[in-house]
Image (cartoon, rainbow, N blue to C red):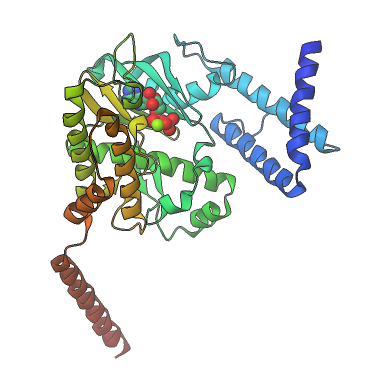
Length: 375
Ligand SMILES: Nc1ncnc2c1ncn2[C@@H]1O[C@H](COP(=O)(O)OP(=O)(O)O)[C@@H](O)[C@H]1O
Ligand SMILES: [Mg+2]
């Protein structure tokens, strides 16, 4: 009990300290906490929980304590509610969220068990799951996103430029109707609903990038399924270990050259499909049995609608070159990026002319229709 009290005091002191910096920051934090609480309530379908406090908090400290108690209770209820036994033992606050994110895949006979956590990052956790016998593979990787992950993405407006918002409809990415004002407003105002829409949208971009690139033959894990909060994909590795990243791998001398070429080819396939990775580096390339797999696509950008596309490509190529220079390769990343852009991404002047004449035709048609209407 004593320990518990000390811990409570610690967390309160920490809250106070951060809070003292400015009352504005405190308000923002409070709103975020509130948003997260509501998020969990909806997630676990506990819109009207009996334990929801009826009394109003008297002061900041009480508010903080009440909120903490609620979150804790929600996490426990979520755990109690679940009847799906999994082999992996989750950490205290991980269990409810993990199960609620993966249960749909369990119900749809895609996975039958969660075996181990492959990597617990700041942003997403990846788990090795046992696949259902109908899938035809032994293991599947599940990437489960933290509720707040994408709010931490620096410069997210840059990545979002030129993208539609995507939702998960029947397990497939769907663009939100741009005329849906309510959603657009909520997203801009960052309401709880808006935050969730944006969150799901990042995830859907990752999934649809995997689909496009897998079908195009690029070395990426095969995508199996997507939900509000998780992606299922091919697991790279075996029962003993998941594939390490390139960053964690010491390549043989004669492997480096071919793997560098393979990486550049993959970037070219992405460009041919109108995409740039946006966070490519040796940290997001897996190495397994002499082959590479590119992963981690939520910030993928559309090279035709995002004005920063060429700069993003340059940074991706630069980071890849940084890694391969360890093996004595002499690489001019700027030149390579320019060549790739020219070859695969720069608009063809003939295409531009064709596009322009199409636009002009459409405008002319619109005019005549208007004129006809007026008559
Ligand atoms: N399909 C996969 N198979 C095996 N391990 C994976 C797979 N996808 C991701 N991982 C592991 O999980 C880590 C985190 O995944 P990643 O998609 O890079 O998410 P983030 O970096 O945003 O946390 C990777 O570095 C890798 O070690
Ligand atoms: Mg990563």
